[in-house]
Amino acid sequence: MRIAYLAQRVPYPPDRGDKIATYHQVRYLSSRHEVDVFCLVQNDHDVACATSLSGLVARVHTARISTIGAIAGCASAVVTNAPLTPGLCRADGLMKKFEIAHRQRPFDVALVYSSSMAQYVEGYATLPRVMEFADLDSLKWAQYAQGSRWPLKWIYARESRLLLAYERRIARAFGHSVLCTQKELDDLRRLLPDASASCIPNGVDLDFFHPMANPHEASNLVFTGVMDYRPNVDAMVWFAEEVLPCIRVAVPGATLTICGARPTRPVRRLAGIPGIEVTGRVPDVRDYLARAAVCVVPLRIARGIQNKLLEAMAMGLPCVATRQTAEGLLPDVLRAVRVADDAEQFAAATTGLLQDRATATALGRLARTMVETHYRWDDQLSILEQTLVDHAAVPHPAMSSLE
Image (cartoon, rainbow, N blue to C red; front, side):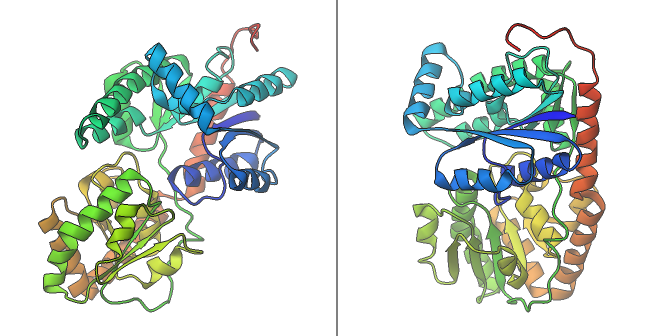
């Protein structure tokens, strides 16, 4: 098949949530089919990443998003009462590149990752299109609104409402929609009962993330993630201020490592608390996972499946997570994670694992077994490939004038 793959960010390197998923999807599909990637770049680093990706796929088509362009896109969205997110991701240059590529050699199917990129193929009604929502961004903005004050509360609520209408339109127009958890699928079916949709979970690179023989620090806790992402920032500020003091009552030597690129000012301030390390970008996150005794994932704003949780489990690390974080896991896999919500419960669950190494070790082994059984990338991606094959084979009318 000739596949058009559209992604908001360059699918390389796999160093954050969406790029982990897009990289592995592109890697798998390009080993079996001809894949053209269409994505946005913001800076020279992104351009270099796109160049590196070009050795993996047939072709990489990029367009740069500028600050002025983003402002213009937002202004247009306000005037037309449209969601801001697609406007922030609109690049006329990429629109043109897709039009030319499709006209010269028509694609058999388009796979679009995130609703913000649907605009690039929305006008191609006769092209088979599969929408990879992963999770529903409109519901994420609703969560943001609940935890914010005016005027952000109003802005986020507006984006949630308008983006939901946009997601509904895309789900109706595209041949099929894919979500990464059963809960996200249930939400889509509740919001749009007649949508053709299925759940295909993310995976984890089990060869890269695996238990290591490195000695761990008996009282070290670790959190990994991009640290300018609001849910991660909120999680760490809450944990450091509300949970960690409770843990230190029982385990005075407990330490916390916050491992991830681009820490914001609120996160950097946490490094002033004794026993908290804020690393910034690191060469290899596995070094920090391997030395830790417990991985904590205290997200209070979460949608979909958390790659950081799967990676820690693949390393054989016992994990404590909030219910919102863990709800994306398959029911059987939940047995391998301690789930707690309020500060007292989270502290008690974490303290229990720090004090009972036998239980912690057994939980870590179970975690590794669970991801080996349920979250192998190629197992999930074979289902995605078949979904594309099925929809590419659906007869469709002759090409429109746009195509």
